Length: 441
Image 1 (cartoon, rainbow, N blue to C red):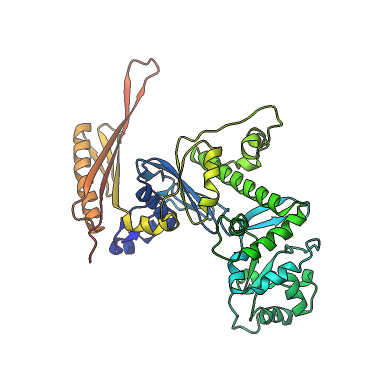
Image 2: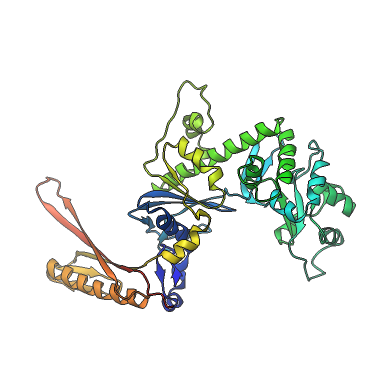
């Protein structure tokens, strides 16, 4: 079985016919996993991965669908998928201190110091020797680099770039140690093209490292994370513990803002809340603890938050407190995606529209054809009969032995100017055949 973009399943045979329907299937599977693991029918599902945080609203156990179709790279695909808002904040987001001493979190992804130092412990001593006051163009003093894949094309890279590749072949290095090995000023190291080609990878301080500093998650190298925090804390003119508290607070505030932003997207608002001065003013006391403006803002979500992904236990409980809603972190939250893929149902949906004909009668607009009828009752009866047959046939082809049929009917009426007469505009019929696939053992 293959996961579709709406979180339902279809057989391999149907997938070969309509592969485009698998678009955004990954986040959709996580949402289905959230329902299975918590039993919650209505919730805000938040999946925090390494690169992004994906948010979707669950109602009646299913995510809201994007009727306009999923948007990929700014292009509307017109392929129906779950309505998911994606934000560039994850466990591996790049944490930087700008030249004007401001904290910047994401959206770029880097390798966490704690993770890579487990394999290359020499990074700890190299970080201890770093002078936090040294300025580097397009990098941070805490940045380190490692070889991801050695290129086979000798002609693509110049002599200095090959020196960098060779220097990283045995071990990862901090940018200053790397500059010494190559014999160049760290500001003159040609790293950009190598990094973009994924020949080398950047290692730096991330939310994963922050959890190691806070002793919340310590599966990897704590010392490397602490050294990274020390360097960046010095650049912010803060003690390491106050720096860690500040980063934690800003990540939690950013997650709160992404949740609120997802509701704005849901209403069709394409504005960016974090860039709106009026929004920042109203939410300052809520997100930043700024109570000097003479008022206190408070927000209560109508949905509990189902938090998924490895980093969520370190950040989401406080987010729930800020937004006055419970946070559910299910057992096995880190593999909700796989659980969703295994527990999903087949759901084949047929939509039909019946409208008045231009010359009288009624016209049925169905996926298979357009058909005219003299009477509305006749049009509805024939359309519903055919829709059930098609939905059942598709569900059975998708792998369900005995599908269940769900029928929804909505009549759209309008009142005349005087308000006495009612005018029929259209009838919308939606037939869904659902069921669990018959797994072959």
